Image 1 (cartoon, rainbow, N blue to C red):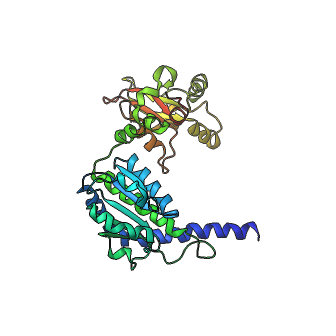
Image 2 (cartoon, one colour):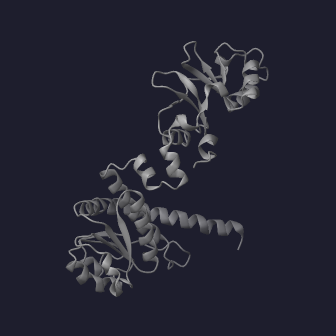
Image 3 (spheres, rainbow, N blue to C red):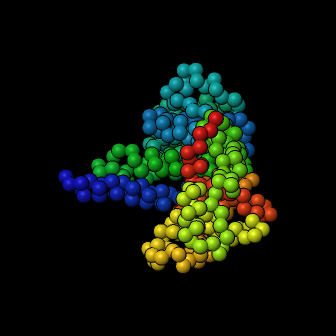
Length: 325
């Protein structure tokens, strides 16, 4: 089989799974909100239970819940009847995951979980199954066909199940007012968490280390300053130190391609006027959001105070190459 044929196989997987997610979004979204409300109206942690691949997905959902402010634990369906039920506190909501909707181990748990007064949510691949009749809320994870070439390997179904878990976590995050600083608090040892705790001013390039020019500066002098202070851009400032524009390396390349002669040009003729900027007191995540906006492709951001004074710039490299302790 040629590489072209194999590429088509890979493309079909993406397309098939995306179609299943699209079809499920309207079908399941409302029930996801109901499930989130059920979780919020019950004290205690969320117990997520599954077996096999459903168990692996359950563990991922638990990890997502815990990292976004919802207390959760994983319960192995086969081990539950051999002592692991000790994790329960009366009223803990339980999410049961099953593609068939008839997993024996989960069915045997139902009467016991009812004794614990645990509200039950089922993420089920068969909405007409035995488990459907026994849970309080069904999140329909059925698919028309698995995405693999044989149509039998759990692919679309596992992707959809995980997406339903993500949607539930997102609804809970939103309902609970979960913020960037909360995420950082739950990830104190991770690089992302550390960066989210920083502000722009913690890692920005100060004005003294940046090329700074006036709007009337000859472009050749702008290039010289950018060479002496290679931060990827020159800040074009007004007399009061407010930001007039920015000249990036990309601006220079485009200028040379179109004109060839830089001696007759000034910074004002090449710069981007009123560029996107970020407050120095903002969290680092604000700069990340602005820079990673695919419509803008920004790699250098001017930094300003709340009064409009430019105090330096921040580069994408400053964010991703900073060593944090």
